[in-house]
Length: 278
Image (tube, rainbow, N blue to C red; front, side, top):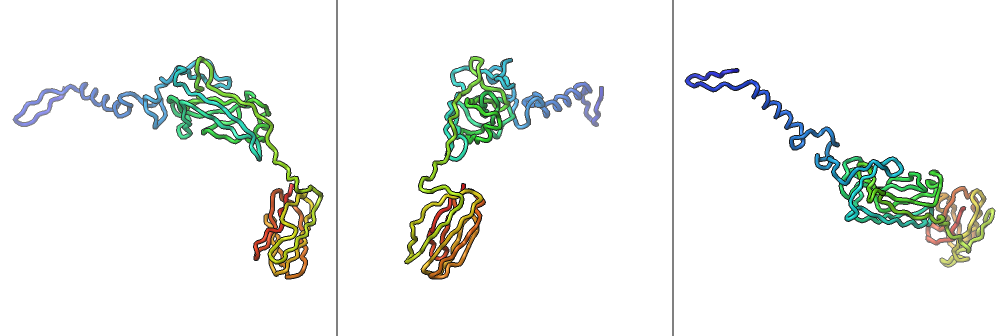
């Protein structure tokens, strides 16, 4: 024991063991979460969130290695799946969820009720992870994963366990229809190359501006005559030519870019024609 001496005053002995115990309690208190250690859960996540008390973790998994986290049917997350072909490529996928919120900012954290992300599977093969209600599925990605027609969406918690009801993953399925193809322009006639003749008089274009379809890699020849001096410009190809008044100007180039390109005059701002290169 130790004694402290103060002139004129006698103090009681302070046990050394009590001093040591107080220091130990203080050290544990500063490193704990409400008096409990926090090393078992992710920094920034509370002890209650990381306790794993949401639902019941089953031994079974979803078929892709993620264990099932079973919750009661009442108030459980649910979803429906809708798929429609995109007008340019692949499909647009829409997930409608209930009792569920997408939380991309907390993925990898603890499992919280009704929170997480979705995953897509094509004929059972993993396809993509989804953090919102909309997803564009490119046709190239579908082919790269082996193709297929049955699209399945499942809901997962932030800790990557699969939400489940009655020992079955919460999921929805839909079939992929054939992807849409752009409607052909029946007013344009595909041909190996094209020669377009246009005349501008009194601010009017003759013939009326239309579309001319050409095959990529072929030559396009433009023959333009204007009653006023102007400048010819082919958008996308950066081709220009002066148009002297009353003279026909010919410009030729290789159509080596696919797309829709406008041919116009700069000063008068008239659309002369459109080139569709496929």
